[in-house]
Amino acid sequence: MRAVPSLRRCVCLLLAAILDLACGYLTVNIEPLPPVVAGDAVTLKCNFKTDGRMREIVWYRVTDGGTIKQKIFTFDAMFSTNYSHMENYRKREDLVYQSTVRLPEVRISDNGPYECHVGIYDRATREKVVLASGNIFLNVMAPPTSIEVVAADTPAPFSRYQAQNFTLVCIVSGGKPAPMVYFKRDGEPIDAVPLSEPSAASSGPLHDSRPFRSLLHRDLDDTKMQKSLSLLDAENRGGRPYTERPSHGLTPDPNILLQPTTENIPETVVSREFPRWVHSTEPTYFLRHSRTPSSDGTVEVRALLTWTLNPQIDNEALFSCEVKHPALSMPMQAEVTLVAPKGPKIVMTPSRARVGDTVRILVHGFQNEVFPEPMFTWTRVGSRLLDGSAEFDGKELVLERVPAELNGSMYRCTAQNPLGSTDTHTRLIVFENPNIPRGTEDSSGSIGPTGARLTLVLALTVILELT
Image (cartoon, rainbow, N blue to C red; front, side):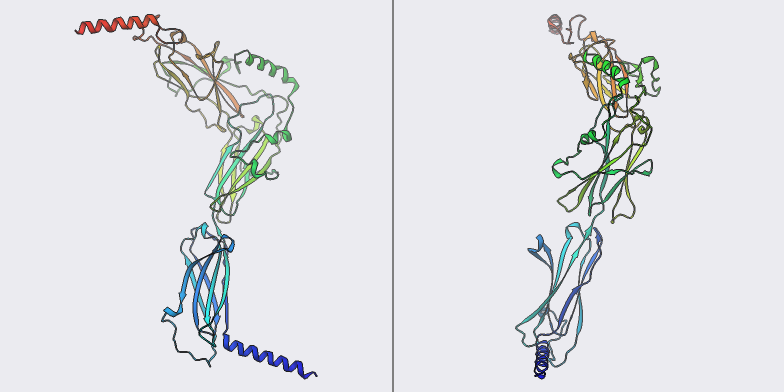
């Protein structure tokens, strides 16, 4: 009874050997590859071992989750003279082959799975083909292509009596996989408190940092509340209070050319008298990351660093954003220096304004590099602007058809960012226009009816003289 299982086992082994002689032997595998960097040359190697006669080799690139296979290389033995047509079925001989596909400059779009399919003829009949395949996933990395540091919620005003949060946004684009982004202050890494990543619906171009304000809010200092309310009352009355007495201002830069139209007044800088909420201790930083996939397979990473701003210690502080990525040999970096505006340069055109001209007063840079971008507010000292408004927000103030009454009027430009504020005054000098007789322009600078009649009489006189 024990001899029966042994006999069956022998019969199975004999049948397997006969089938192996009939079908042939074939194994296929693709050599593994580490992640490659976009732009490098890559060679895919398919090794297969067989004792049969080769029929074909086909390479496929698999896309759309395996639903589509794109043929990228084919070798057909029927149309090749590299193999002898003489066969000896009685001789078993294992042969090792290798098929290679070279991608000279691999791209991110080449990322994905690849398959190598090999076919040999059946040893029993040439009508059948034995197939085997191997696969590999080509992981293509790409280093970030750009890095930028910007300030969120800008332009923003300067607040002397209430603490305000400040957010730096580091935008890193073009990387695959997503890089690691971190901040430094004055060359030292910042130990920040990580916050959860926001949802995709709330990730905008520059996400508002106001959700942090409930986390970092500090109350007003009671000792400064009364003074703050008095400033608000002055603004509600239509005027704009001086930030400091002009006699305490700085002298203008002698290198700046004075325009004959205006009289430059010394700059007025906001005094740095801060209430009790300003502390000299190290602030608490909060760090938040968001990742947005792009259609080309790369990822845009935004790192937001938020803290309670202290103009006393944060002014002229150097912040850098650094990026580490496996495709980079050294970290990628972008840096900014927080600087309050100082010494605005005022340019007025035309250089010699006359009655009826359109005058443009423009802030043309500063004595220093200012970050973040400041906001500008124009007011007329002691009166309203030409259009009747109390103030104008913008870098350039335009006065259309200036009347003679504006001669000697003084204008104040307030430039401010969260680090500080500065006032600059300029005086407008309006010259007579020989084309407009004195007293013929109205209060808006346009020519009145009397001026129009005088112009018509002069034109008729010239025509009569010519005839």
